[in-house]
Image (cartoon, rainbow, N blue to C red; front, side, top):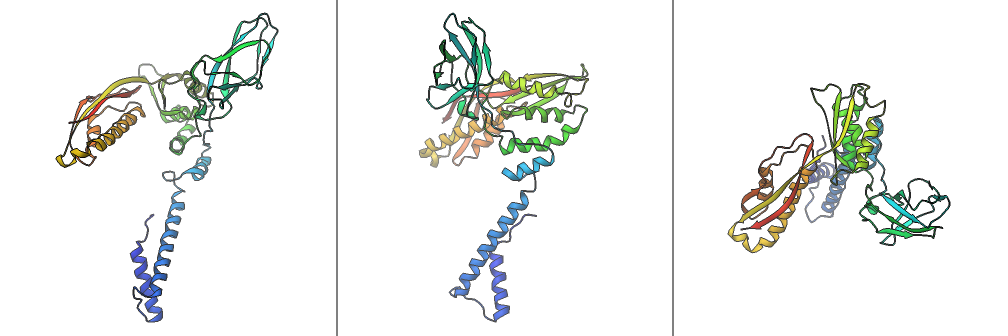
Length: 360
């Protein structure tokens, strides 16, 4: 359906057509041969572009704006970037009057460029020693993540009666704009949201819509408790933040999403830790390149850990690790000391740690 004509076939056809029109067979040294090659090159490029834009009409291949347009048919919009949030604790002089904390009361982090502002305007009662306010980064995205307690503590301008202001929680929750793969999966699930019977994929669709940091969701019901639904959430970073669980609970509680008879429980995925320890035997000729092979092996091990960590209920299968490492040129044998094969339950995810990757 999307095949390209091989350049050799195009050149042969152009040479044959030229011969039919002029009665002259083009030799490789003729200027016409160069022109034929140029025309064939341009035709190949044109076919490539035509195929690319034809593929953009299909969900499997679409990307960027084309994927956004496919989503619009089903009412699925790409999730925008979200700002990181943290809790700022203000300490005041005593006594003091009522104080308003609004968007003009900004703080800057220790990097002297990342600015945080209140998520909403709050009124601090008179004569309160300390008061906590939720702040968010002015710039949406991951730029505001990772400031530990005490690293956001500089007021951009003095505020009357404020002795000190600093974050007491790590700034988290900042996300970039939803990527193509996450959006593609939501579009694929979108038709299930029109089912008002509380289908499994319908719950998964709405949960994935709650926050772009969610990479996988499982929904199931215990047969012994009809009407009770369990929704398990997995995010890029673990443990799953409570703020993300609250978002999922809120979106699944809407009356046009949740059937009246369903009792929905939203839970964070349970982490199942395991260790990775591997010994690699090389072919004799590749022993001098053991350093480079070891680097590549470590990359393969991290890929294995990430694949398991990105899917709820994915079994820990050491055979997959052996397959990945045997694909490295020069590797003769792989001995996986750990992990052993482990089944992962429908509300769990495997979280691996590298103990050692050695060449023997």
